Amino acid sequence: MFTPDALNFWGNALGSLGYMALPALGAGIFTHLVTLGSFRRITEAHAAHGGDIKGTGGIGGRPASGLILICAKLPLTLGLSTGLLVSAGFTFNETFIYWFPNFAFAYLLLAAVAAANLLGRQAVRISQAAALGIILGGIVILIISSVWGARVPAADAPAQQHLNPVYLLCGPALLLGFDLALYGGWRSPANRVPWAGIAAALALGGLLYLCWAWIGLHYVPREKLAQTSISHIYVARALLGHTGRIIMGTIVISSVFAAVNALVFTAGRIMVPERPGDNRDAGRGRRSRLASVLLTGLIALALAGGWAGEELLETFIRTALVFWLFHYLLVNLAAWRLDHRQAGKGNAALMRGSAMAVLTLALAGLYLLETDPKSMGLLMVVIPIVAAALYLVTAAMGKIRR
Image (tube, rainbow, N blue to C red; front, side, top):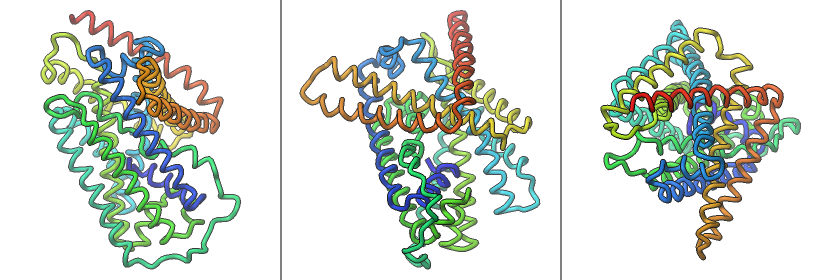
């Protein structure tokens, strides 16, 4: 939720639209809460048949649904992790130790993720909780410090050419990824999905973004917020000077670790579906750990190959985001179909909510596609082909080992 890319995107939106950016945040929170409800209804309705994959399979069949899940999670795990690790390396180099190579720190952070995943689920959960605690603590400190800061004039506004209404369509991107908590290893010891906890996390994330909006618009000129690629650094420095920069640097590094850790761990679970007779910890756990370490190896190769910073990487990430949003859209469509079949009195509101979420997700996906339609169109063909091959290989291996 609070990666450097997300924080900077929110700062750019605030700089461009001012308080008019808040509807985007509201739309994002609403869409994700509705989507979470759709996940829950589908999972409970098909609990014995694969949860949300079975439910969305009612739209395009189980193999197509599993393929969409792989397309949504694996490409973003590889692409976004590569970009985020480089950002963390530059942040460490520019904020803490100037002489330390930024790529060396990126590899060290990736090695920490690999070690946590290799040690197992408990190590991943403990390290994740520690990183999230640091992020939350740092943001709360900055919010509290805003009481004593020096505010910029309220009349300050960006030039007309920086007003960009497309930010209103991208609210769902700010809180993307809540569904990672639904896949296996993040669940409670009783294997129950923490629905209330996920909803509370979404609400808390929205509240923190709202506070950050107030701080950003009161302490940094909108012109600077709209044009920079480090708006979050500017806000932190405006609040506490060099100390604020140190705090934000710590938040950035912790958020990168948390994001990459969650993506790699969850993608590893998705790559290794549960088989009949598996012991949850001993059977699937060993295979998912190996899959996660394999993913960190692929990310390391992407870093070594100089993929970070290339325009192709940005296009790859945007394409993966489209697939992720499409997965959410498919889940809401499946929930709408389920509610329509049940035809209960209380289902009309749920169906309207699902329809509104589908519209919001479709608009956000169309905007992402519009930024580079030719390259993204090609990737939207290549990615499903590769994902289909991976899906078939893992399914075949599962049958052989049975």
